[in-house]
Image 1 (cartoon, rainbow, N blue to C red):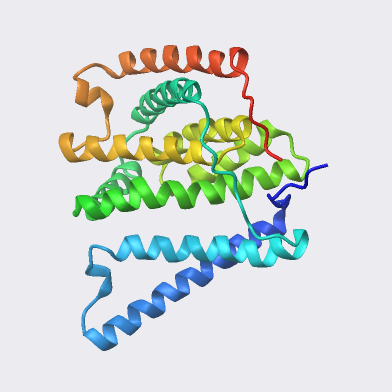
Image 2: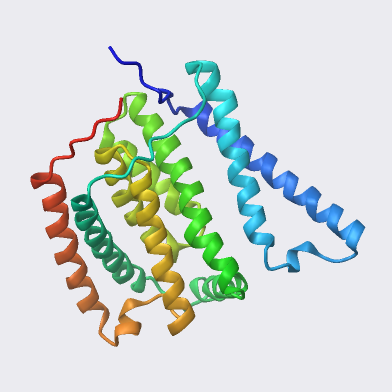
Amino acid sequence: MEVSRYPKYTFTWLGGLVLLGGYIFGSIVIVLLTVFWDLIFKQSIQGKEWFVMVANAVVFISMIAAFDFLIVRPTTQKKLNFNFSPTNFYTYLLIFPMMIGMMFIGEFITAQIPTTGPFFGEYYKFFEELMSKLTDDPVIMIITAVIMAPVFEEIVFRGIIQKGLINAGVQPWKAILFASVVFGLVHANPWQFVGAALLGCVLGLVYYKTKSLLLPILLHAFNNLCSSVLVFYTKTESFADAFKVPEWIIAIIGIVLFSLFYYLFMKKYKVHYSEI
């Protein structure tokens, strides 16, 4: 019997606390770095374009390292490791249209959430101001959103949480749903929650069936790249605005695309790779 090179760790409430601890530790490091920079250079590091990029990297690396050294290695005697194997070209022809379909569906649902009013209006204004700061430098935004975020977030939400739950005996669909909802919640606003949670379900499904973390990373990067391009060239993340069509048309196209390619991916296509 061949021994797997991938550790079979589980994700429980303890793993959640460890990830939280890694997040807190990383945040403290960023605060100390901010104070140190202010004392030495007499200026605020938060005004630097690369600050958000570095802060995200430090926090995610702290979370992943904490889970690796405190959960994975003590319980499995192996270091945290993932399968990043590519798959045959036919797989990509199925998962990317399925992803686009869910992106369209997510946009339609998000468009129904109010952006005005006593609560949503102020919150949306704050959210827009925050996002405008993140998109000041296109290069930094691409590195952060299209490269770093897909890698770090897929390792944490699909690689650690979803896979760990399945290894712990949780039904796959429940593990996928839980990881996706948490993924949506960490975005901390209702407009990104819907899209993130729905797309998380697609990412989780693809990871569960292919066993390769490379595929959800590529899909995640593709989603963020589309959002970045829309922001740069249309000042909005709306496909409907970009294509000059009503949101209901985007929704119909999304439902057709997702339904068709979900059916082909789940019912007709057999993945020949199995993780050992």
